[in-house]
Image 1 (cartoon, rainbow, N blue to C red):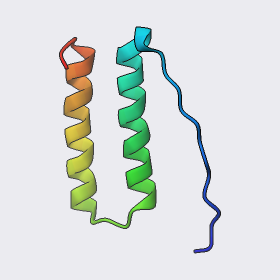
Image 2 (cartoon, one colour; image 1 turned 30 degrees about the vertical axis):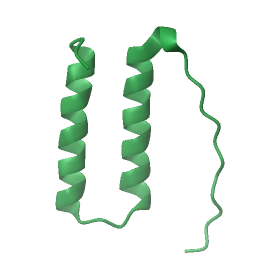
Image 3 (cartoon, rainbow, N blue to C red; image 1 turned 45 degrees about the vertical axis):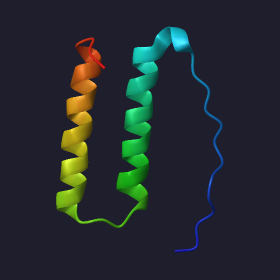
Length: 62
């Protein structure tokens, strides 16, 4: 596995805080799921936890 890494610059607006939170959770989730060799049960727990956080964000809670 000899892949080149990517450098990404991320900026966000504080006016769109909810959208930023959702985007960051999904980005982090994707990186973890794609790049780390972890057990499927741990991946499932990560997804479940992130979905709970996302549901709170969508309902207006933090």
